[in-house]
Image (cartoon, rainbow, N blue to C red; front, side, top):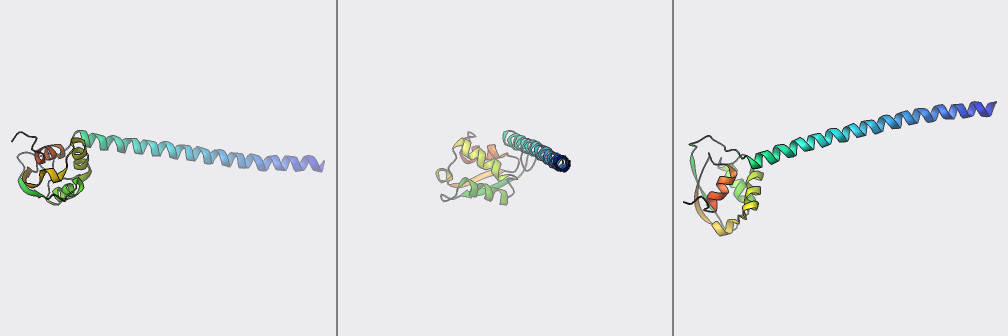
Length: 132
């Protein structure tokens, strides 16, 4: 009889750990789902901002003179444009620069940009792609 009692106690202990394990798995599963949703929404917002770039100001904006040095990287140019109030999002500029093949050392010199231009328009202007 003592053996039967011991087995039933062991089963009770095992059932408790199974319930705890099941709850932990459920919580981890929910956490993963929430994390995937947050990453998905964040990725969508980032991609949307790249595709539909915004400008700092509405037209007519203000013109700002910038000078591109041959030692600058696209990230350096983006940081300078942000410091001068031409950009809100440096990553957006760098992505457009990479997509267009913008290499600052090929386009050194003085350029006039406008606060009503989005990042893509600014890259085009720096590369003289606007037909001016």
